[in-house]
Amino acid sequence: MAVMLVPAETERETEPGVKESLARMLASPQFARAETQRRLLHYLWERRHDAISEYAIATEALGRNSNFDSNSDASVRVQISRLRRKLKDYYLETGEAELLAIPTGTHQLTVLERQPLEVPVEARVLPPLSASDWVRARVLPLLVCLCLVLAVALGTTSIFLVRQIRKSHALAAQAPATPNAFWLSFLAGDAPIRIVLPTPVFFNFKNYPSLRLRSTEVNDFGAAAQNPELKAVIAKMGPVGLEQSYTVTWDTLAAIQIARYLDRIGEGKRVSFQVTRDSSLLSLEQANVIVLGTDHTLQPMHEYMESMNFTLIPGEERVLNARPEGNEPKAYVRQLQGEERHIEPSIIAVMPGRAPGLKVLMLESRDTSGMVSLLASNAGSHAVEEMWRAHGSPQFFEMVVMTEMEVHTPLRSWPVTMHAYTKVAPSKTL
Image (cartoon, rainbow, N blue to C red; front, side, top):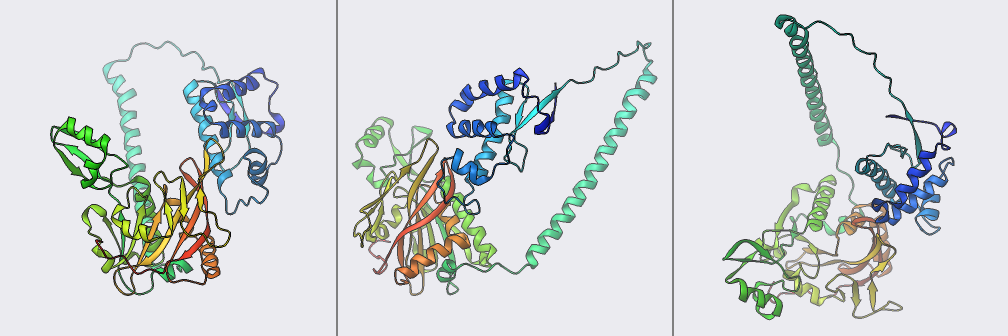
């Protein structure tokens, strides 16, 4: 059966199949495991004839509070996009006729009317073709069509390449964007910028070449003997070696975000990447360093972390506040808001490097992309700057940040408190 979009005023919603299809969909395993999309679908169905705003969807269907602002919070657009995709997936998986859709660029649920396809006229019975007639009738038209397709493809490719070259030239000619206040301070001077990605410690086994093992409680090769579970595995599997061939996905993506932002503001030539496996962190004496990770993966920076007031505990469920100021709590805790949404605590710290004028920017979080979005946006850097000024504009500081997440998608981040970092750069073993 073919389908076409039908305006609301002509929807045939009295057709039994529509409501039955909706009921099956809401009760299906695909939607039973996604309560947010299930609730949103039911809400849009009930208001399919109304002109509804993002604000109404956010506050009435998604449980957001009354100060919701669609300009700074993309959660409605994110959920509509997921529901649009889930509807298509449902019809593909079940094989049912497509009856409900959310047209791209809208948040309106639309009922599709099924239209019968035209029945083709019965073909006449023709006498069998000779070999030469068959070639003329079948092969020659096919060759002509193939030539036309190749010509169109070559023409389209040429146009695309020309446009891409012109676009790259235009971008190269554009003046770089102005860095926001946070980055102006961090990038002062002309020192190189080194983004260091953590390479967690894995163990390989001589007797089992394809096997790699990781314990999140062991972040130094020499500490394996102190972990009873890992020690027992090593005793059973035989000779063990160090393996550091991997970086953390979320941190790698966040590092790319940082590099793109720095390139956009004209600082791309100063940027290079490094991994902790290949670095003794001598770069602390040579460059402004940006490190990303968690307590598990930032062990090469442990002296910095031990010198800080704020501590992100293993598991990233809370940030401990060793010396609360004023009415600050002793801990900033992960908040669960539903099956798919939660608020994660994180730490941003700017600390001295190992040479005059150099700095270390540490982003410590379960998912560092939210903090990068905060620092790379004008609104986010403005919020950071306001808090920085409210705490006396310290040259170095450590800050607690909360990030609202929808599964693995950061929706928004905001600073909640800041302390000045007044210690000198650690120098025992770094």
